[in-house]
Structures are given as structure tokens and as C-alpha cells.
Length: 160
Image 1 (cartoon, rainbow, N blue to C red):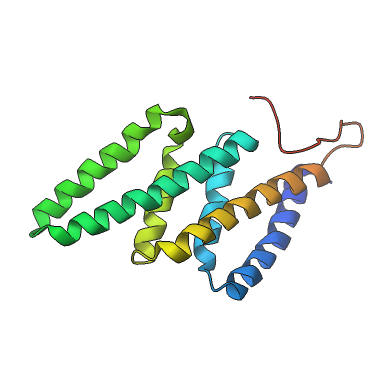
Image 2 (image 1 turned 135 degrees about the horizontal axis):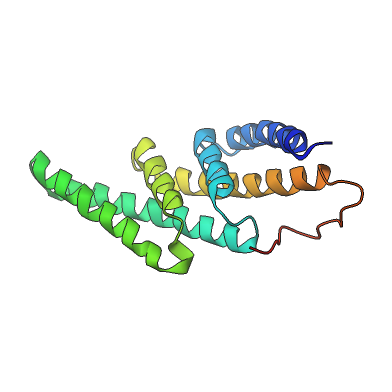
């Protein structure tokens, strides 16, 4: 089976399972799909990619909380705009740290928190579980789409 077809198959199957899990756990399914998307977008598809995605999604949630709390203390739209600019700058500058170098993950975490109107208690676990589902989609799709003459991958590890 072609890798693209096998990846599509496992993604479809695990997306349906995630939708059920999200409802069962009363988590926002859309946030889980954002976590899944973040894993797929991360350039590393190994344990390091999981760790980087986890760290950046989590930091984005934290940055969003900072913006929400500080915005409540400011008056006037100009202060809010300036605050957003400063925090967006900090969200990017943190990428100097290897663990936080995936800027899109940080913004995905922040945007998910804003979309949930600051409800980080439901967004964060949904993002994390979605990220794990994304990794499972990738690994299972790659294994299923493996050519018969290829060596079977033992886990998510691959060299970059």
C-alpha cells in the first residue's frame, strides 16, 4: 500500500476514535485536532518531535493566559494591542531554546486557548491527547505503508 494511502487510512480511523474519546472525556475535539496538526507540522517525527510539540503547545497556552490576565488589567485598546505585540515577540524569541524552537506549536497552543475563551483546563489535555493521536497516525501509517523489502521501524525514531 502506498504511504499516502496508508497514512490517510490510519488518520481517518484514528480521527474517528479521537472524536469519540473527546466526547467521552468532554474535551473539545477541535483542540485535539489542533494538537494532531501541530505534531504533523513539527519537522521532527520522533520522540524529540513529541517533546518539542508538547513544550510549544504548552507554552502557547501559558502565553495566552498571560495575555488574558494582563489584558484584564489594562484599559484602552492601544494597551491591549501593545501587550499582544510584546507577547507575540516573546513567543517568537523563546524559539532560541531548542525545546521551544517550533514557533507554530506555540501559536497553535495560544490560539486554541483564545478560541476556548481561556478554558485552558479543557484545551491543554485535548491538545496533548491530540498530539499523541497525531503521532499514532503517523507511526501506524508509515508502518502500514512500508514496502515489503524495507526494514520494519521499531518505533517513531528516525534520523534527521
